[in-house]
Structure formats: C-alpha cells, structure tokens
Length: 168
Image 1: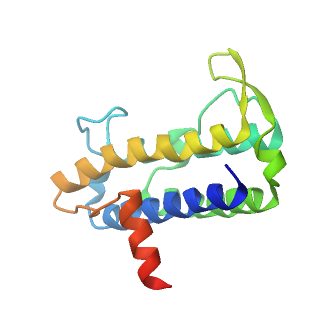
Image 2: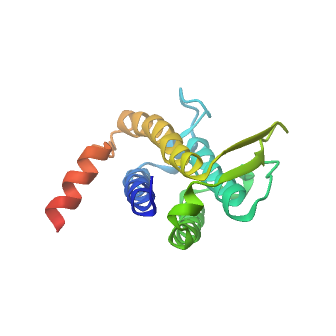
C-alpha cells in the first residue's frame, strides 16, 4: 500500500462521515441522543466512538502515544460540537497522512491497547483499520438514521469511487 492509496481511503472515509453527519443534522436532538439498538447505545454515542477511535489511532501512529482512554462523551454533548471536533481531527489526520512516505507506511508501529496490551503492526494496516472500523460504525449509525427517516444514502466505497470518477 502506498501513500496515494491511503489518502484515497481517507478521502472515502471523510466523504462517508460527511454523509452521516449531514443526515444526523436532520434528526431531532431527542433522536440524536435516544437509546437505540446500536453497539454504543445511541446515534450520538456511536458517532462519539467512531470519532474517538480515529483520534486514538492517529495519536498512536503519529505521536507514538499509548492512549489509555477514549474521548469523554461529555465533551461532545451535541452534533454541533462533535462535527466541529471531527473537522479539526480530519485536518490533523490529513496533514499527518500527507507527511508520510511510502517507506514510512511499511514501518512497524508499537502501541498499547486501552486494556494495556502491547502490540506491533505495520502502519498502513493500522491506518486501513481506522477506515474499516469507521465503516462498521457508520453502518450502525445509518441504520438508526434510516429508522428516524433520514437515511444517509449509499455509503459504499464503490459508490464513492464512481462519484469521484464522474467529477473528474
């Protein structure tokens, strides 16, 4: 995997996130925080988890920091705050990705999980994991949004690729 491939995956990741956040802006505050049959309990907490995971992995990869906690949910009480935080995180991640050489993408990264377990993986695999993880939890968010009558539409990578091809 090379830098161009990773940047393409993150273009997709942020495009799909934007679709979820746009659809989320159309639900009521009550729906946004309401208990739902999702892994993290509500649309809000699912999005907080997805964002928090991006932050944790960027810091592990870029800063070499073994983060020991996710973002506190209390710091992201509403969609406006969460969206603003996500935009800043996207800028930081994109700057980090732009700084990486192809050789750097193939280097091993050592980190410790939130449970304190040490691991080592190749950087590009960790970065690909972040996008894949986001796909899982965007899918859960999309289910809740669809139940609330605000489907984000198609989130598939191939749909993004085709849309991008038409634009060029």
